[in-house]
Structures are given as C-alpha cells and as structure tokens.
Length: 357
Image 1 (cartoon, rainbow, N blue to C red):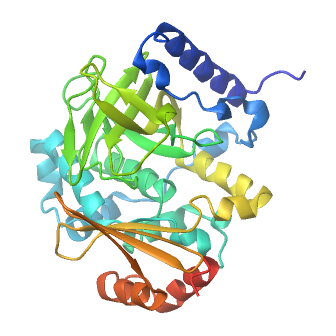
Image 2 (cartoon, one colour; image 1 turned 180 degrees about the horizontal axis):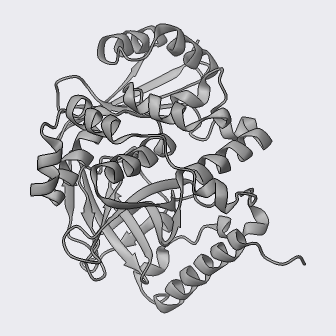
Image 3 (cartoon, rainbow, N blue to C red; image 1 turned 90 degrees about the vertical axis):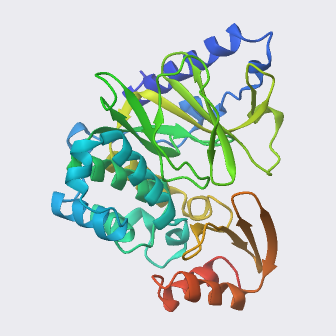
C-alpha cells in the first residue's frame, strides 16, 4: 500500500477522534452519532494535489469593497466606528444581515458555465450582486469580509449528515473577540437560519438558540469536533440524532472540524477537480434546485425545492409554516417579483437544466 498523503492522514486522525468518541459513549444515547463512511479516504474522491502555494492565494476583496458591502448591501452604517466600539455586536449584525440579504442557492450549478470553472472574482460577484450561492460562495466571502474589517478569522471544513465525501461544507471561525483565545462560529452559508455568531466557550453542549423558525444547539465531541444540531419539521434517520443532557432530541445539521484550517481556493479547487471527474453527480448534489431567502420586506423565509416538473415552496414564519406546490410559471413570477437580481435568461436556463419544463 502506498504511503498516506497529508490529506489522507488528516482524515484518519478525524476518524480516530470519532471512533474514540463513539467508544466512550457507546452505552449512552450519544452512540447514535453517525460516523461518516467518507472518512475512509480510500473510498472517496478528494483530490490531494493542492499545493501550499495555491492554498495561500488571497481572496480578491479589498477593504473598500468590504466597507461598501457592509454599509450599502447589508445596510449597516458607520461600520468602522461600530467595529471599534462593539466588535461582537457588529459581528452578530453582519451574520444576521448576511442571512437576510444573501440567498442560499445552488442555482449556479445548473448554468451553462460549469461551476468547476469558478474564479475568485466569480465567487465575489455572485455575493456583491445579491445572487448568493452555497457555502462555497458565501462563507469564504464572509471570512474575507471580516478580515478586511479587522477581525481575526479563518476557514474550517465540515460535513453535512449523510455525505459520502469529506469536507462538503466550509465555514468561518472568528478568534479573539471576547477575550484572547475566544472563538465564535460565523456561518451564514447554510440552508437553515444561523443568524448570529456562536460563542464556543461552552463545556459539552451550548444553550438553545432560536433563530427565526428554528431552535439550534451545539455539542462538543472532544476538543475540536463541533456538531450543530437543530429541531426541524424534516424527519431524519436515528443515526443523525443526538440527545442532550435532558433527553431532548436534536437533528445533526453540520459537523465541523475545528482543528484543521483550510483556504477558500483549495476548497474551490476540490470542487473544480471533482466536478470535472464526475460532472453528473456534481451537477445535482441537492437533487435539483435549492433556493432559500427572505421575501422582500418581510420576516418570511421562502425555501424552494425544484426538480423534474415539481416545485415545492415552504414559507417559514417565525412561528408558522406553510407548504405549497407551484408551477414553473408561478416560480418564474415569484423570482421576478421577489428576486429581480436574477436575469430571466438565467432562470430559464436553470429551470431547463432542473427539468422544470
């Protein structure tokens, strides 16, 4: 057998951590935590050719662009003064406004320009234009934005439950805000609302957070494995469930690996390589169109799923929920009314490639 690469060795360390965690809790309900099979690199498609030179490539965002985005796109005035006077309050407002202003969507997976041809300028333009994207677009931008403002931030990887590959999510950790060595998770690039920076100074499980319609809670597994859980209407397998100290049931959303920093460009390179090798699988990672955004001037979040002539829209109020099926024409009208930042030609192409005829 050939020797392990650095990437393989890191994943085996993660697997070892997860195995130790499971062994230590096998007699309790925590044993329900899933150990992703993808942690075996011999069965995954993770490219290992990214060099340190590539990983150090800076994100193409200037301080002037960062301040303009915060003050004009996010509508947070006097950003530099706010940062100096209340770093944590400012960070929380940025994360909240990112959730409210930037849609989460995989729309750009279904355009004629392959996502594996992405450049840094492409990623930035999608955010500045309000078109958003998945975590690949949103969270590296967030990290660069925070750094330009003056925060100490870095990127980490994670996994969504049930993923068959490693590092399918990317997120941001902000350090040294509350005190030297403090840490906060800032993750506006998710389908579920996570509308504030989460302090990471809790012992085993965090307090319960209520962001819009969803209750969330975080759990530590050893010193560097953070698990975000929530309570949602969606049913999940028992293997994706954690019970807290009070016996309350929580559904795993993301497992974060906090001991391994990453970079935006090496992460995009992973998707570029995998997309070229497996374009069909890569093009449909969510089995169709996913779009999550606030409706204009409301507290309602619209969550859209569309594939093969079926479109379902879930309207989430803070304390209400409505699910409706709509036609392709009604979907186009919804976008044109609520989200005019998307050109009609782009929407038509996306609908066609999602088989929404």
